[in-house]
Length: 533
Image 1 (cartoon, rainbow, N blue to C red):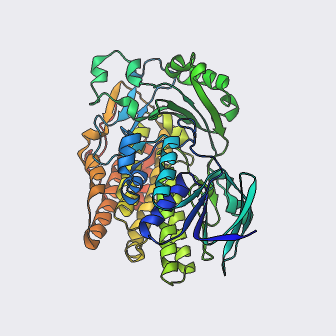
Image 2: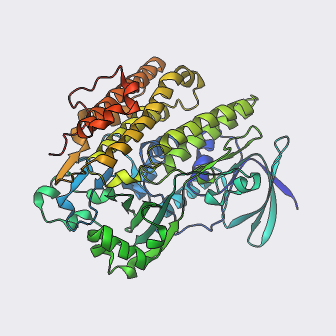
């Protein structure tokens, strides 16, 4: 069997693998890249893969790093942000608290039909001179960090041997390298997900006749949001797809809502009837529109290693997976692909790879740990219409103020600036853990009011400006000052959250967070919404 060589062999031609191939082509015009994908192309639209919603880092990666904004504008839907309804057990969602922006925020993102997008990515790879082998199954893998890695691939009944200097596992949960090298690592975040697609649009505006409620949003495009129907221990997503279908999912804490109560279409309908009756009324007669039905048990996991000095790496779901809440999947693809691209650049420049692989992996896992704090043990808060909006504001501010700034300013691999900012970044990471713990304790004792109101994120000037600020192009000094200013802002925001929590639950005055906030003074509501009466 003859062996064909390439500089980079990517195992998996889904979102992570195809976007890495395009990023490598952007960086290196002369690099030979081969992508091996198990599924035959073109893949089906709508009911292809879950993970349709993007947020700012992932959107910026696809738009600007990969140069795909024209494709997104032509073939995908612009997302109207996140939207939350505290609607458990309620027939009328206009009678509950709604959290979301009334207008599009300056820095946006996309709702992505994965089938359409991955077909577009594969075609774009071909246009840019990247070899793409679909309907190809990896049969053997040999790791050799001293010479060349080798894989045997079967395609159309014939086997072929491929060698490469770099080998990247982008094969999703199949985890080809993870299994071979025993890199799998469980994670204690125990949550499950059920999802399906139906072949028609779900427009929440159709559920309400009240003109004043409809006019809260301009444009009247709530259907373009990632809509969350929230209750204790779970959230339900409603995501529109450009193909005209709608994605529906239930994500839940396994201890509160067992998977066995919702893991078939009939069980899911019964679950909706009890917990989200308005959605049940929409779906109960839609079985003929059902395009698929799938579920994951204990979907979150880690990985012992994602980057190696022996010139292999794991990206996307082949490595780690957090939680679909806040849609971080494409963000972590963007981050890991950027690190892999930089490692290949170091190798091509003759620099040693191993030291950089260790450092980049440390940062990658640090981002994973700090983001995981937003989810782990937090699902009981989700039905709390007082505490959960506060959590969402904090989580957004932490994301836009720190990690998104690092990515948008292209400083992920800037080890000098990251080293100089290490102390304030570690401080705010610890503060995030403390805030998440405070929110959990506050909600446990909260009276959980759920008045009829809209909490309009676009009405908070600082919040809108923080989103807009991602578009700034900063020099080194301005970037450093931006991060320091945002750390100070987050401390003040945390102090206000702590003050509000203590006003509601006086015993929280003893919470350890206050020791971290000695220098921060909570002003009179500079950041948060007015409290419910």
